[in-house]
Length: 101
Image (cartoon, rainbow, N blue to C red):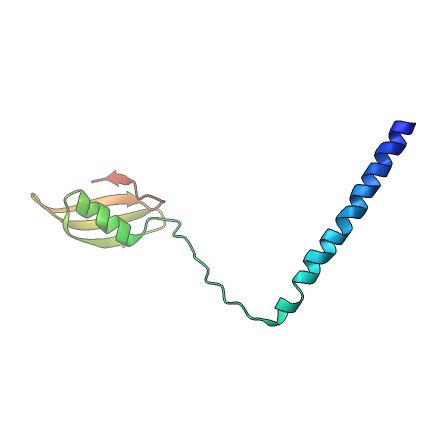
């Protein structure tokens, strides 16, 4: 029974010790409520960026590369290679993996 009372008293002391810490952090945010802070949010591109797809097609050897079609699933880039007109199809996910050429 003494162990239970000891643990209960220790828990109560720790709980009471944590209460002033919460009041001080809550009071610290009070004066800043009348200041307007502008935040610049960065929205990451979830799919394949058209610029990234064109640059990747140029790395594969496609000249005069441009986007011909963009859907939720694929990004199609057309251009010329050494044999004539060609197109490359990239998946519209992060990293633009090549599906077919």
